[in-house]
Every structure is written in C-alpha cells, then in structure tokens.
Image (tube, rainbow, N blue to C red; front, side, top):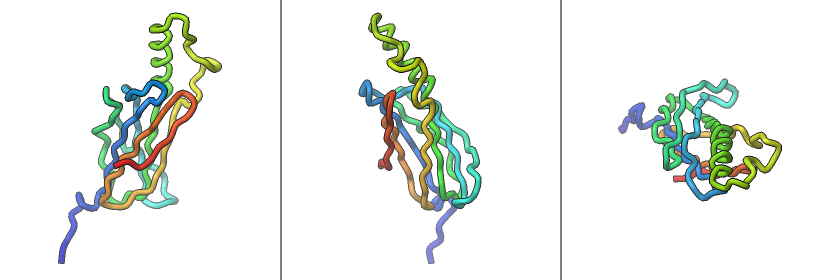
Length: 137
C-alpha cells in the first residue's frame, strides 16, 4: 500500500508574461494568487509576486491542500503606463497612448480548475488591446 504525502497532493502554480506588442517579457508586473476549495467557496488571497526581467514569477505561494480553483490576478496598468512612457521617450514623436489616455485592460484575472498533485504553468500573452492565456508546461 502506497501512501502519498501532503506535498505530493499539493498543486503548484507558475506564470510568465510576454508582451506580444514588443516581443519581450513583461517585467515588473504584480501578480496576485488566490484559491478556493470547492466551486461555491470564496476565493482566499494567498499572496503574490512580481515578474522578473524574464517576465516570470518563480516564487508564488504554495496552494493549500484541497484547492480546486485558482485565480491569478495580473496588475498590468502600471506596466502599460511605464511602457508607453518609455516608448514615447525613445520615439519623441510617438503618442504616449493611442487611445483615450487610459489603459484598456488595467488588470487581467484568470481563474482555472486544478487537480491535486499537478503543476500548472499559466502564461499570459499580453498587448495593449488584448490578451490570451493557456496551460503551459
């Protein structure tokens, strides 16, 4: 009879962000992690991280045993504001923002189901007017 430890039953999550408008990682984006045990349970904040120069969060908190759903919250507004300013500075005649002066997607929230003992890598492909996510490896 084999027994599994709590660590083996625990799921884990990692993520990275690629800014597809410039073909580079999105550094300095705050990422929040929340989880719940059961579809009808409330999401419980677990903490967060900030993307590194490679656009990766390598230190997200562990998921509690019994987690069934996870939400990653990406705070992209400050990233886009800084990115637009840096781009405008680099190209003096470029507009700081092509729209109304506000960021179209100030945050991205991705909620997904998890199974005990599996790792979930959920990349965010981001640009100023759209995004997509997928289960990576």
